[in-house]
Image (cartoon, rainbow over the protein chains, first blue to last red):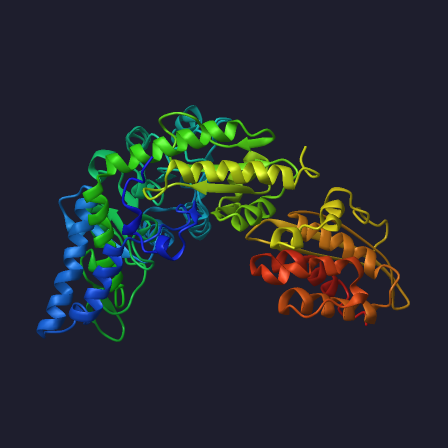
Length: 406
Length: 141
């Protein structure tokens, strides 16, 4: 099987030819196109945006706004002003929790999340609930690792003001039925926030079709640099929300006692934006659009299907998450008696890069009744050989730690 | 010896599977604990002190082989020793795993954890119980 894209597109594999990199869920490797785009910007177009009247600043501003338009196209909105650049998904969710909290929440109100959320889509809502005297509720998931839809409907009957859930779990690989969940949540009167940190890199996304009110992405997980991520929201909602971070760039008029704020998206981009990084992110989005997100997903599905099949053959190994079309390229697993940390260290020494711990999902691991898991994740530069190397290394690990297992 | 064989020697795996000092104490004079939030290793220590000597140490906890074996070996090593000596041993252990200092023979079987120095991500696992020990002994020396 070939990788979906030439391995030569990714310089890291020249530097580390024997590396089976299976940790894209933590962060993706970068194509040369992204690195070159940023290098070109730094070398020929760099100046601060929005603040200068000289041609170089205008060129930089043009590039920054063009990046915004590219991300809008990637996410499926015709309106670039609906895309706000933030540092990462965590910052985006903090922004929403603060702004929506201030705008919407009264004591006694409900916020609905799920038990499979990454801490970024849990803790900010928890803290917003504390600040505003609201109650946080969480939808449980089933034995297979899918959201309990009956429980979701029951919790919707409490008429939460905000419903936030992940499109794709970073531990279970579960892809939630976002459009259906969003439809039900909106019918119940909620503002719907979708965490697309894992979803956007792997699945074709059209925010208008998904029916959510806000969609959060993670730039560095979708081949972009660290430091810039696209946060999409409906125009009417952005216009109603107060700012999160304040300072320069997001104001209209400032006096000593008070200020008025700029319209969106500027209202939500205080200070100097990560404009060089946004240029890199746009190059990443273009790279993905050239490959085609349908193909990216099909590749994910082929790899995870193989992974689930070969890992099933390894005795004593528990593999988490559902099997089926709603399962993306993330596989978490555990040998009973061997701690995830020890297993990941072993695999790492065999050139198989995976992650161990609770992957910023402690409540999820509590429900799985394991203290930690080891996680392999696939992306467009991985192949079946990478899957086989994982399986072989796990088989070796089972022998190495035989005294501990079972 | 390869890095893995270095780290996961017989002693470490045996202590992980068949610990000697796991448990609690009926009337501990000191209790302390520690947790590694990134990986979930946790340790709770129970000590009985009398006249400046550590009479016994027991621990509860969960986590990787390195963290739990280090706790088990530590508890055995410092039981029966004066507080000052235990604190000296803590310093020597940390020097070995954090800085890669040559293993001090006073550390006994703990020298088998010397390989941790080559794996920075595992240092916190090895030192977890020792930091809990130092916390427990604050003001006792």
